[in-house]
Image 1 (tube, protein in one colour):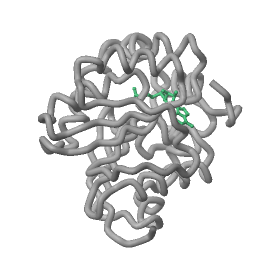
Image 2: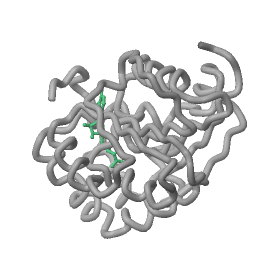
Image 3: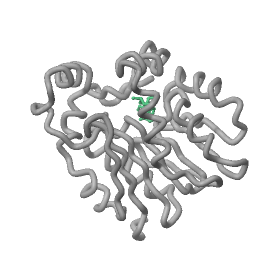
Image 4: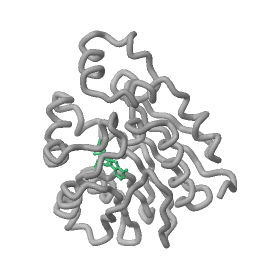
Length: 220
Ligand SMILES: C[S@@+](CC[C@H](N)C(=O)[O-])C[C@H]1O[C@@H](n2cnc3c(N)ncnc32)[C@H](O)[C@@H]1O
């Protein structure tokens, strides 16, 4: 995978991509599974929703979301990693209403479909701010009016106030863009691009957050 942002921690190398789900389980001391189940449940997925998953990875999240959908609902996963594509297709192969598209989410793109929900999980923090803004615009442009952008990522917190046993792994494991992301006001950022009616769910001592933002104004 071509690395465009040298300091990014979400442009994964093939080894991390191949073992991504296992690494998440181990690094979270087995808590990742319960956390992701809770967060997806908190998205209030409707049975016939069409969901766009930006930086979908292995398809683990898509498979969980599929359990809330009937045969009218669908999930489209976008990612640029060939290793992730193989895993997504293997994991989600049993769900005919899932598709994987090899496409960059950091640049504007066209698609013939618009969605009820756009989901992005642990991807937005890993880019420079001007690229996050491109991703937010992409989410906005591919949502139906009234649709929601569901951002599961780090919350807003002061890294220096973390207990050392969280701070050290965070400082060692995350990229500089993540340190910048946790200091930003995500609601304000989203409001500038036409989102409102925010709902926030906090997890992991508030270090993780699901932000649900509704598309409310015509900014196309
Ligand atoms: C940290 S992983 C998160 C994967 C998944 N969303 C999850 O929560 O399990 C980041 C993902 O973003 C993908 N990615 C990174 N840069 C991307 C880009 N510019 N366009 C599309 N996908 C990208 C990576 O290949 C990887 O699958």
